[in-house]
Amino acid sequence: MSEDCIFCKIIAKEIPAEILYSDERVTAFRDIEPAAPVHILVIPNKHIPSMNEVEEEDEKLIGHLFTVAKKIAIEEGIAERGYRLTMNVGKEGGQVVFHLHLHLLGGKPLRVHKY
Ligand code: 5GP
Ligand code: ZN
Image (cartoon, rainbow, N blue to C red; front, top):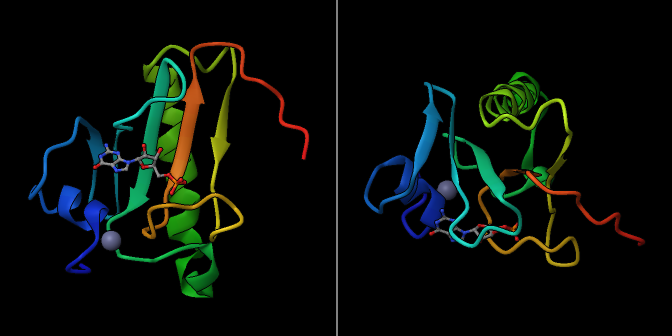
């Protein structure tokens, strides 16, 4: 738990969020400013600021984020149509909240980004 982290506060239920899934390792909730009809964030309960701070011991945890995202995609009815899993890393990667999170986006044809 990091005192000034908005996502830690969501995990601790100090600020509200529409939580769709939680277990002892991860929590998933709807993004407050959805960029697509389905926009869900899957986060580790452990405060890891970004992918840059991930250690080898976190590998299973990172994998778990993806399998939870996959299950939610099925529940949201977008698995067959397709969806996008994105992780922004650091300033130039577009990361704004420094508690690692996986974006699950779908429910419409997503634009293909040209980098
Ligand atoms: P990033 O740009 O760091 O990859 O994504 C951060 C995401 O967190 C953004 O899509 C933003 O809308 C979302 N977000 C920021 N603050 C809150 C909040 O208080 N509640 C929820 N549910 N989402 C948030
Ligand atoms: Zn945090």
